[in-house]
Image 1 (tube, rainbow, N blue to C red):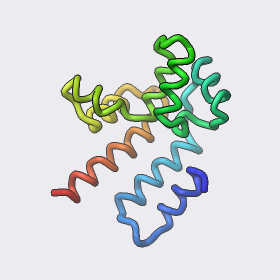
Image 2: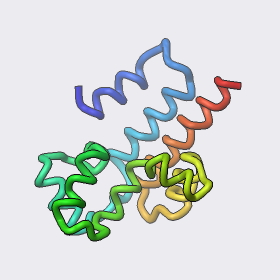
Image 3: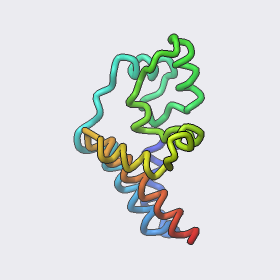
Image 4: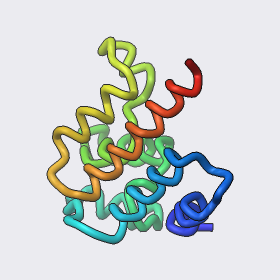
Length: 132
């Protein structure tokens, strides 16, 4: 099952919460509508190397392998628009995952990144509310 199918399944599943279905709806909309992030040459090369269709599909381990193989220079900054910074790094900054996604949302220049960040914010706040 690919990401689109998984999101459609969540959206259609009556056992899911309204919050979960809304997050799926937002993510699906971002994948198919609005402005799209223009990828850097580094990001396109990384996707080709791993045979992935989108940065959201590149695992963090793959990302770091790619960085290591290509001299460790800071490449593919847009990767972090689709993945949260590592917890260890966030701890050093004294920040949280919610901070990362709120910052990503505020700084997003395209609809797809903005919708993805908003979906992540909704997931995190729903978890916090259910834990309370």
